[in-house]
Length: 70
Image (cartoon, rainbow, N blue to C red; front, side):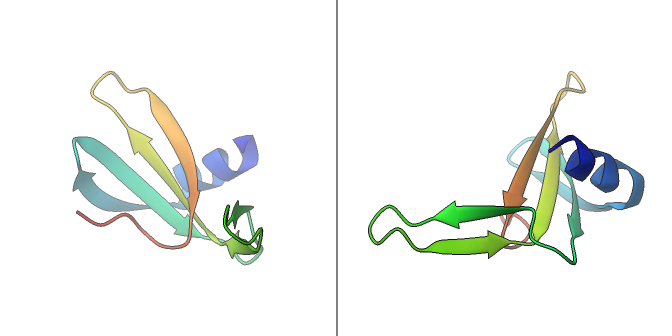
């Protein structure tokens, strides 16, 4: 996740303030994680990474399928 966070910080695009957090995101050529469906165990590769930053400049990296929406 550190490499994903660094790439987003260096090359990511500001996507707005959503639910009180500044968000930056970046699409990756290779999967950066997987989402596992608890019902059937199937996995979905995740190619989008998002960093959300709070008012105290703390950040959290989230692998996703697409950018967050309000």
